Length: 291
Image 1 (cartoon, rainbow, N blue to C red):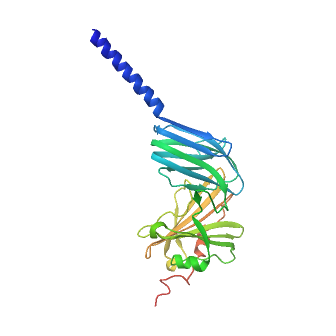
Image 2: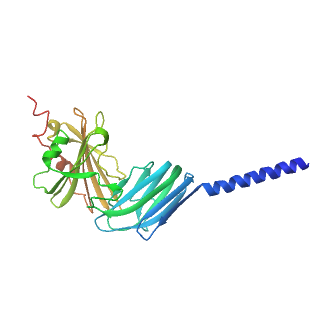
């Protein structure tokens, strides 16, 4: 009898010790500090653990999400303060240390961290000026270039449409000889656009940098591109901040992915397909220039 009681006590003590260790070693927190930064920390945090913080985004500021996770995955939702969490502004799942920038617009936001795979490490969320050349410890991956330099980076380069203003070319150089990502920004009829192009090889890749819950795309044929036989897809989305439209296409003969994106308060009448069609440049089309 004494042995049985001793065994039961030993089991209870072991269970208590295990429970204490679990509660101490499995934890997650989010702190919003006076520097307008939200810091998430996790130590063996269990899946479905959820914590949140608040951050203010000023005019012409981007939101930077800089993870330093040594294990696991964390879902991050950024939503306007006071909105329903079922309709988030934007949502990502992070692992490792790759950072992301997003320009949600001026306002107060809630940042929710939800562990999806047992996680250890930290994630820092902060703001920086959109035109900044980079902050200490995070260099701006984009550099300004000319149209001629862009043409040297990728074949079959698009052009700015007739009548476009505020034309700006930039490139993000690929690491370890990876293909460069070329970007063209412009304003047409008062609407801002961002177009991107990159050699992606055997399949199309989403190079737009747009993080929306897109609906079912409309499949279209883009005039001018590939003799009018270029298949494209047109997407539309809407969130608490406005609308977004995206047109993507892929040159299967060369392995090039393209995207054209626009955001605004009301894009209901915007024909983004027509803008993409007007960006075809016969002078850079290597197929049309072949003898």
